[in-house]
Amino acid sequence: MSETYSIAVIGAGGKMGMRVSNNLVQTDHDVRYVENSPAGQERTREAGRELTDGPTAVADADIIVLAVPDLALAAVTAEYVPQLKSGATCLTLDPAAAYAGLLTTRDDVIQAVAHPCHPSVFLERTTKEEWADTFGGIAAPQDAVAAIESDDEAKKKIVETTVRAIYAPVIDVHWVTIKQLAQLEPTLVETIACMIGELLNEALDEAIHTMGVPEAAARSILYGHTQVALANGLRGDNPFSDACLIAMKYGREAIIKDDWKKIFRDDELDKNLAQMLHLDKIER
Image (tube, rainbow, N blue to C red; front, top):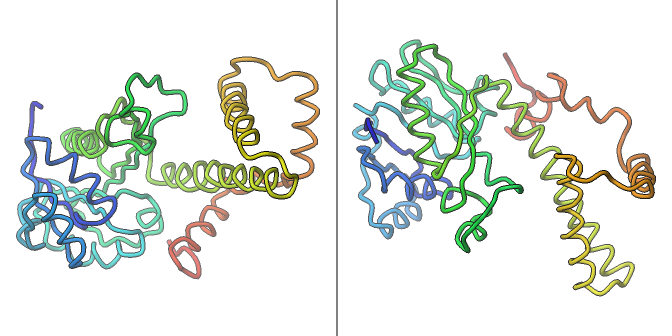
């Protein structure tokens, strides 16, 4: 690593905080770990990491990583952003609060957002550790998506270096705007992809418990055909058969609303994020 930075992790003992801290501790960066909850403090200490109080940790930090839930970001940025040195970067790990304008900002503090892509379903895994790491950040390589409100290449480098460290091993970091990142997460991946994953599980349950298909048979055929469906649908590996296309058309007409693509509109994105952030509406 050519350059090292002073990094403060806020929420270091939480679920995501532990993940990013487990990776940062393996780098040469000067990392300070901040955690308010007693349970989180215990987890941090059990991992062999020393805790630092918030004001001390952020005072001279080049970048602070806010590994806290979306609903806490408004309060956390209100507390810590005023304490940052001029030119520091505040990195959040989800775009919702940043897009909704809920974060405390300063003209001389850079606002950035990053989110992991998670290991691709098409990733060529070669070890048991890579196969076991479905979330990413341990053994399986993944990409990340990042946004920064600055044209300063030096600041962008700090963000990319930090992103590559906290989500390691990282293949590529893709740069977008904060709004585009919000359109990807939640609309593309949570509203659509994660919903479809849950729907697949509900369909599996129906096949087993309503239709009476033996569970092993149902799981085997669904898992295998899900891979084929993704490979054919997303990459065009093998054309769907004519009979399959007819069944797909029936499924689309029976399940999908004609106007489903409205979820990509700005007003629908605002509605979705408002519900996630427990707001009446997004104010900008």
